[in-house]
Length: 101
Image 1 (cartoon, rainbow, N blue to C red):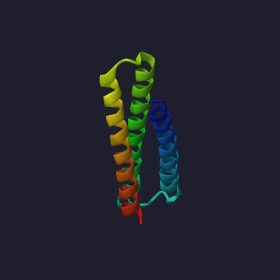
Image 2 (image 1 turned 180 degrees about the vertical axis):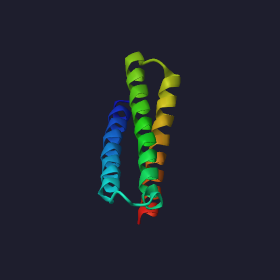
Image 3 (image 1 turned 135 degrees about the horizontal axis):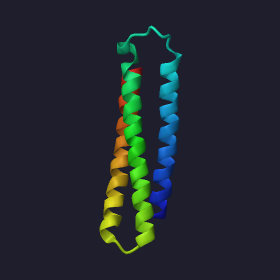
Image 4 (image 1 turned 180 degrees about the horizontal axis):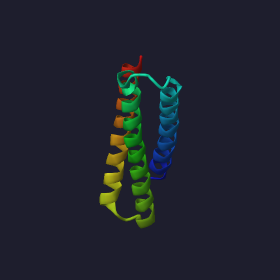
């Protein structure tokens, strides 16, 4: 569970860097750029915020398990959340790559 705690926090940091790149990219376009041109970047940024929220929830859940230590149901839930987080991260990478290239 210590590994899940560290990995989910690390994923959160990586997602924040990725989100920063998307926001910076949006900012490099001139003010009159159409919403249609910026839509893929904005959509990617929204999904990145959701993935970041998932990493925070997984980090909090693993921290709660470490504090309680005997809650088997929380252990299973935390591992499931981590698996979903990894799948969501892969989906985010595929989606943003497909839409912005």
